[in-house]
Length: 187
Image 1 (cartoon, rainbow, N blue to C red):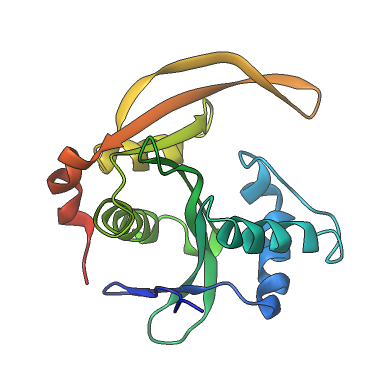
Image 2 (image 1 turned 45 degrees about the vertical axis):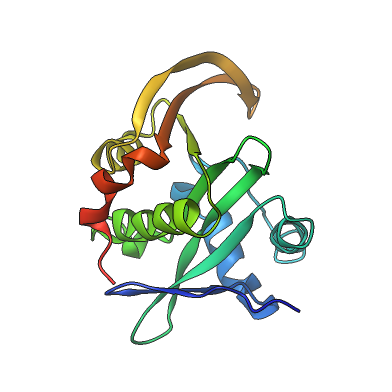
């Protein structure tokens, strides 16, 4: 079995998601502020097993990879980040990332996303990393801008969520843009 790639930055430790993390995944994906702009949510711990299975299956079928985002010094769980919708032929993947609210506005998003981007381009040999952000999610849009993702446009009324149509902002970063992100990667 191939060893799972861990990533360490100045303040973060990105490690394999383990079954015991279900408590924290549920805490995040049932928190009203986290799920406000996230595509999935769970009301019970038992239901959260579906998300844990998604993380496992994504890795197993090589359609992506997700990490538990943890404090480098304490190991405390902070959130999840990774890639899905990976296409080897097109050399692209979609990035996804969420943090528990107590870690917001402290630079962890840009530090962690920067490390993921670096991994995606140098280890997965991606050419393109995509991000789809709900239009009202200003904090995430600012993080994408800060990391020099290019805003490609808006998919108007693209999906339905909670019975309402939502629009998504489309962002991308190309491997030639990696130098623009490196200032946020602190290993």
